[in-house]
Image (cartoon, rainbow, N blue to C red; front, side, top):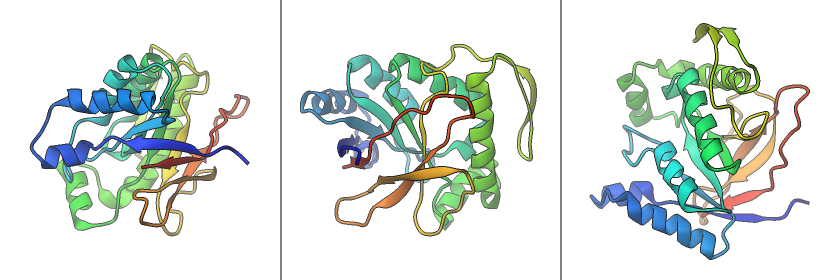
Length: 224
């Protein structure tokens, strides 16, 4: 059985609720987590429903400030973004982190506040899961091929090249988060990410890399 790894969730939302928007404190906490021996630090995503520091920009700063600790999103909402731009950001972040990045992704909780967030950026909420799945497929292609054309239900583009490529040939590992019955049909293996120690764990699934690539081993993580 894989060893248990302990992670620390950076309190980006808690800081914003207090009206404190100094990112240096969050970066210092990441440094402290690394010094204390934590295995990973994570940043959440919710630009409108629960405003907070952007997770990818914050983790870019953390990548420069740390050397060993794994960096992760818990969780990112790809359906709010275009996969070309997100693939570019994640590949650059993986480079900055020297291959220490895990991309936790989700579709968004089905409630009125989350629906309003999707509406604010012009994304149809009921289509978020198919948009998530299509985004993952497009990004994997963009990370592993020199020139990519893609035609799907939500995205259509031709002859796109991205640079830099991620540190790892197949790109950073992608973990899918959720609770209850699986909403995504993506081929996965079980992983776990509890949101709070006092509540049951929510399953996180690790997406399978493209055929012919070497999968990255992913130990079990518990995030506090």
